[in-house]
Image: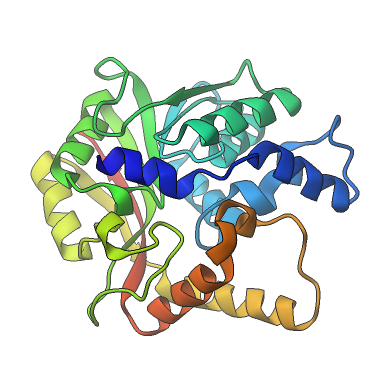
Length: 274
């Protein structure tokens, strides 16, 4: 039932057409788009594409690696990794519409041979043991109740000495978030845990922590820059607001407020499987 509600939360009817119309409004030829043309909408996480670039550098992505993005959304990170690093990238997401849109956009940018996309649950990854060199998540586990199983599945599909990297949201010290937020209209869909809880869980799963950084100040600075652009009238028709429905503005403002009030924190981490 949680899976069904999560999928319903993220689904936006006619999303592909909405994105293509926004691209056209921005003056793009929808028959000749590149992965970078999509960055404003397909990097659906705090700090957008810059956070993805940093994570890829920390993970030391290179050609020949097979990377799995758990909770890939409409495929922005897997397309970025495949196009910029020449790796084989696989994405999985619970939301069928996201995967349909991700598949269509991947074909439009000519990456269908480097990117594979699946619709499925992070708690039952449809991959064999030790299948991937790198497992990657960006703003994914907030909707996952069973975090023990979530991280065990990631460990299962990761090769020995493989890398797990994430850029994710966790519970801050000052109480529950204000809702709605991008990942939940209300608290019943939100399963935040504290950084300490997750660190202990990951170490208990067997991961070695190589890098663990609170990037909340960077996230706040990023939101400030977005607000400045809005004030200057330089906003774009293409953006992650297209993925958040009618309450997009409220979600955006609450996200910024939650960060400032230490109700949520953003962490960036690199771990190694023994």
